Image 1 (cartoon, helix red, strand yellow):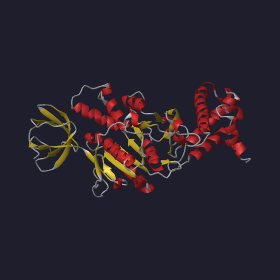
Image 2 (image 1 turned 180 degrees about the vertical axis):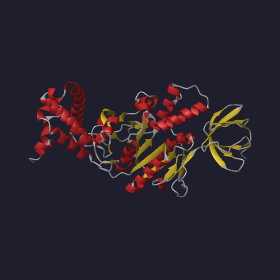
Image 3 (image 1 turned 45 degrees about the vertical axis):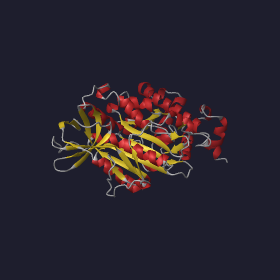
Length: 460
């Protein structure tokens, strides 16, 4: 029979310190009963011969030294079945949509593990998001980890929702699902997310985990683990292609820092725990494709950079682990451009694996390079115009400057419900390049110009 202990000697923040227990394991699931009979759950965080440290998921309110603690001998598991698709759950995996508890076909340990590099298959299939600045110039590839670096007040959540409802595997009939993990969001944001999912029907192929700002911080640490365990079940047990979207990883890391402070750990950079890199890597490296499995997991982590500082530990460490980044620009947002993704500092390191003939279109790489080159040059010329004036520019420079303005208005800018195919995106790129003399298209081969340039396509 499992013993109950009433040997709590200290309660500090979300932590309980329990004396003189039987041997317990790290991450073991704990049940805590208050004096009023209310049941709470916790997890073993640290153990020694004298004391066991337990973190409480629902907060320590109502707990006292007379509360009882029971060690279950098990770890936290996520109940899973195909019926989980379409459900809205709390950050701790409990139903939040008024529906019944999930009747599991299988329950899986949420700790998980990074995919063994020897078992990994190289990502190579294109995922279409319907957003030109992603599909056209920073392509997402199935099995990739591609974070969005944003700032406070920017519309990264709208971008996340648009990706969640529009993402698809191009030209394939395979099952596609979205696991959406929201961490530390406000009630207003949660209502906005759910209204959008229900309005667009995206909930029919999604599993949503909502951890609100007033939920316990320790629950925030569970949310991505629960989401990834769900994604692994859908991908590797049900052979689905799964897109995991996190918003906001900064809130996750803040919860990690809060727990570190409660445990009186020696802080690392800017007060964050020294193991933050390891923890983030464990989460991110659960994305990918396993050899012999039909499914895949692709991750889209979204994080807000404190003070728009890309050297802050959270974006800095995320950039080391992931395969690129998309930068949300405050300057573009001020111009009223949506989505305000700046392609110049953005990068998808796996883009070449998912584009070209057989994936998107043979002209994709060349068009992307040419668009990038003249947009970057046009942005540089804006600084020169501020000094010498537009009249001092050469005719060529004026064309490039006008191209940069048109690029922002026609290629970058699109509606929140506008779902562009990759072919629409490439055609928009060609229409912009049409304003330049053919002699300036130095990054595109002649045979591609003759085949795809609007001037020649009209003659066909």
